[in-house]
Image (cartoon, rainbow, N blue to C red):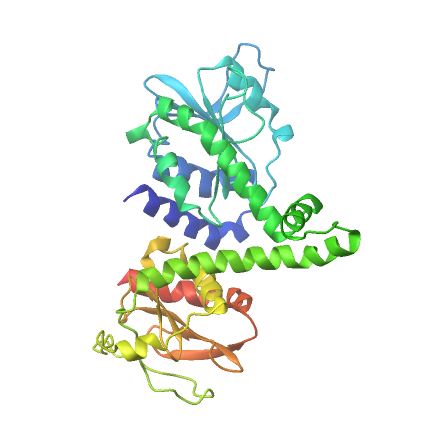
Length: 371
């Protein structure tokens, strides 16, 4: 399997089992050892590759141990410290990582609770572990752009020089992305003032700033949706093959999709021109894709918009519907599918309500991939 497949497979395992994990030791056995063994490719039962309860004598308090030391080329290269799943990761609770980092050859340290993995190196000062990670992998919301960098730390592709040289850029890009996400969720006064001063020609009074506290996050959300919308429309194109079905009464509960159902008529350009993709449909698609990326790679989830509904498909295959967004009416509906491809339409008030049906969507994708 590819590094992507291995990560998503472990992400599914964590999601399914973390509620049953009650101790740090159970976290190690259920999640961290599979990460070391399956994702990074080290033999957890070979002491020449993985040393559990690692101890270094020089300059380290007696009795302290690091949970795992990963060996490559005969040298300890990566240190791993584990906390219980669900426990916040705080460096002040892992001071031994700092001390061991200084007295071993390791250039990479990992702090994890089995679900979130924080990777550290010594960018700020030689042989002194940085206080901020250069890479953060969250299995609850995998960022696929980080996986190639994670691949450089696997046993088969271990490339420390490449990792270190890219770490500085990764560190600051990651911090910028997290800062942007925080500003989009809850804009700071500086953020609001910055944009207000760019578009408002008069003095930005407290009353004006209060107005912009609402306008800035709204504009940011619309901007992001428009960017995604533009990319989707480019991918779909005017000659995309829309899935067309008769408009049925909204109280209809099931629609069966046959395995030999037509994929749509690509020549029906007049129908294609009438399709308008809305911001809510884009947001709904993003939410569905975020939910099911625990089952498959995100790039396998495709979209096809039609006059009557917005379809979400696995592998852009009309015979593998994941969901339908019936948003072109007074009452919005989410269409979900069972193992026989029967559609059930569920009333929802906003795209955010899709999160309440995450298990159903994941099960639908799992049914396709199991076959």
